[in-house]
Length: 460
Image 1 (tube, rainbow, N blue to C red):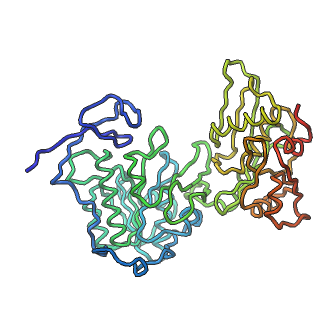
Image 2: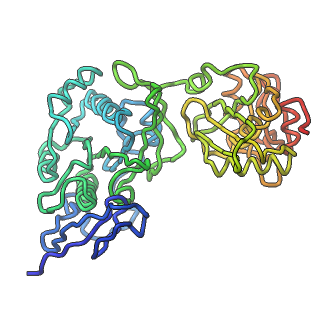
Image 3: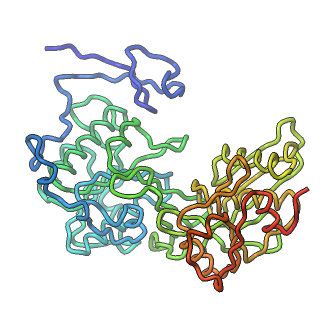
């Protein structure tokens, strides 16, 4: 019988070492290596050898199952982010800050699925069954088809899933689950990895859709080994500021759909409600006649969204000016500032620049470049942008303005929200058949001409 071995495993990234080290050489974090015993003979099964799995290779055209076989969650915004609904037999990981509403969202979805006549199992490892019922009563999520279990033993959960055969199972949270064959404590790298592997086997073998709730670390990533995000089919992040009632759900990984879709929710007394008009939400309270403000027409997946870009430029008292961005990558802001200084002649080298995407949305698509550049120039030159003008376009290093996709959808959303003028790339005109009578297109070739059209002034 082989002897037990022990290794030191990083609780942040999963790096394993035979000796203890104060700093993890992989992720650079301090005091995260914890000793864990490894027992090869008693190691838990990954759970993949379950009924229903194929014994050997088969021709791909003879594999049973349809990629379009999806289960509606009953929450339209969640279905949008998932790509049209819950894929049967999928494993989904939902992460977010404490109190953002992960459990509330999934409990609402569980109740909606149960009300369709489908059995659902909600496993809570952090609350008792009575506490889960109290929350369900508050948000109106009671259903006889919704089964609740306060359990943390993976083997017992497997027994419940085999006995009741639900179509949907929710595990809240994966960090509280443990496998008795492993001596490490719940939440450790080994326990999280093996528990997720067991749930993966159950999802694929029994055709049960499983949602795992994941805790977040101080750095903003899901707690546990990085392999956890590789095991699951979909990774969803639930974002929201504590001072705001709005929440944003986005997909970081999705094997069954796009990762560009977002879902917008508002937290109320009876749980989360989907926001059908996010543009109005993001533009609510937008000041008019103030420099440093520009409206951007963004495209998040198939959904066009209008957001306000706010910029503040002040003379710096430091040796190295500050560049801070909220909702936009800092490196991207630095790149656009360099283009403004080189191609448009704005001397920003001695100024602090602060940028914010109002409403808490984080934008990464290229169409946000032009609105960001115009907002910064507006704040620097103390010139306002017309309140009924919307902008979008990618800014190249040569100062050229490039076209972005989904031009028609952006213009339609801008027209619906009352905007009648759009500054965009000249090539964008060729990509739309939009009626000229609805909104005036102002095509521009470079950043200098864009500033002239948006601010009605040639930059000095």
